[in-house]
Length: 260
Image (tube, rainbow, N blue to C red; front, side, top):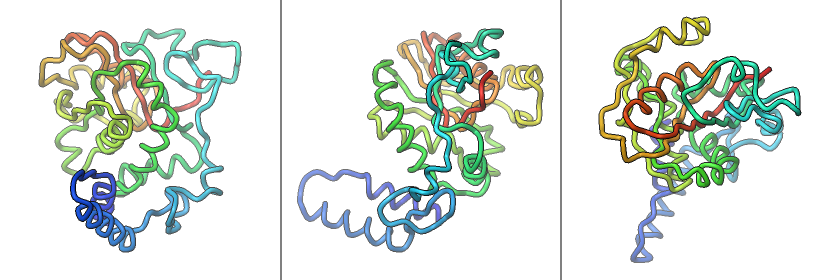
């Protein structure tokens, strides 16, 4: 089902300039796939015909809003504070980051299904919301390339896909930004970060990433991941990129925890 859902989106988004008959065929194919594999709400799984989420379900999601940490983008309780406690104490390798949702409520279940239950059809919803909220932000940054946080070869083989890759590719397409999924690779399988402490997370990711191509001509890179917790994964990837010649690293993720 999810493979067909991907095909549906590719057909719906593919532009074929030229003869009007080509456009007609494209629309017919898209509508046929939409009938067979309609959009479903990522919260309640209800079939939808003209939206990507139910209006009532959308109200249950906690979007990130000001005030947020200037560095990592975590929401703050103190409107006067500029940085969260973590960013005050620790120096990050990236320059700035932002997130779409707070990691609470229905978002937890949606992301779990997106990562582990083959719900690749959620990609359009996540990418569309990210582009709506942060499309202008990334364009003002002058991003040279959008790059997803990679999975190890073993984990990708087990799961069948990398959710960060799906999200990053579609987001880049919506924003008209260059995209590359092979520049940054993960050289080894690591223990899942959620099982480790903050210090263990940093050690777990030492030498976990590698650059496969020359990146000295890339001034600003936007890293994409699904969840930001302590920033260890983004920092490890950003460090490798900076050592290879990239000047500034930014990141965007689907969801993030609460700052202090």
